[in-house]
Image 1 (cartoon, rainbow, N blue to C red):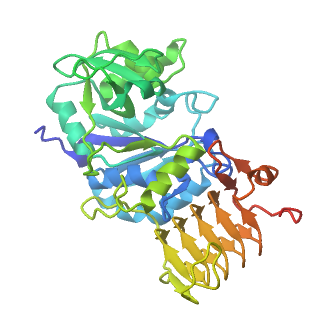
Image 2 (cartoon, rainbow, N blue to C red):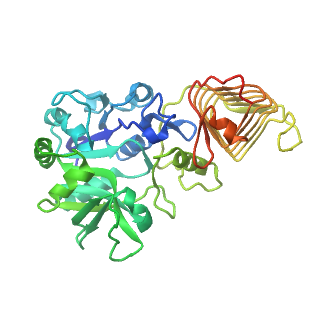
Image 3 (cartoon, rainbow, N blue to C red):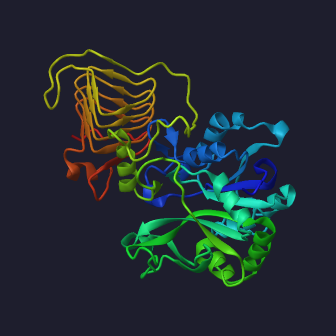
Length: 419
């Protein structure tokens, strides 16, 4: 083992400014890392939980777009974990325009524009993460590998089927894990020597020797460049630097390697709905690797007005089946199936919610039906309204995905003519 001192030698920077255009309208009022997920979490919570579980307590979150919701979440739910007397911290850092008159133009530019933070703290190693992925990873193992192999740059990677690799940066390695080529989103990815159906893909997780990174970013800033790690930085340093690949070791403890970039509304829905399964691919109930978040003090969830009748649109029966139910939820004489309900949702009598994600403080009116939908915070579904049954009608008012999922944005007012 390297003997690296995580509290002294390592600084973590998380790229948390993602605009998340393909998740619109969920990103209408917030950045992608701040999008709610799994009932009580935000997407950023998974990367931050990995940091805390890896004992990394010096963190900068580089924000950019619509950062208020994210900053509020960090202040309420995360700041208390960090002890300033031990030089621990978590700070959100918006674009400072110290070195340019523009916002961040690429992932590498985001770090370069905050290079003064590196000069101030002077860590030996910089861990760079993305704030919008769902996975479990012990970054301490990655850092040990980086130091033990004497690398200048270590790239976390995972095996991806060849037909999916065009969305990623693809690398080839030698027998010593040294990266010998790197192509960003290639049309014809190079397969692994031991597996012709897969290739090694970049996860957007990097460890740099800080001195090496500062020199590299300085050169890139002066060049004609997109100032992006995948497009510019990594390909430029491979010929001369010690660049190695660290293959993802999943702390999720399942029979598949779980890492999700929730890039579209349909992928958000599918990843979320997996959580309600009997044996979800992503394990939220692993107390050895807890996922932390901010939670208000709320009463327990409850159901009232139970009955023994189970028609498709039920009589007055407070029933929940195969669902994730958060604190403060009240199911009042309604039926909920295969759904995720966030805190303080109320589903009123005779309503029927199925295959849906209902976020904080929503109210589902009496006799309403909600199917195959994502309903953002603070939406009131009026009495008798039906969502997800007539997609042509839904498209007149809301976003409907290619897979037929209806998206209702935060605080959306309903039109009276909608039936």
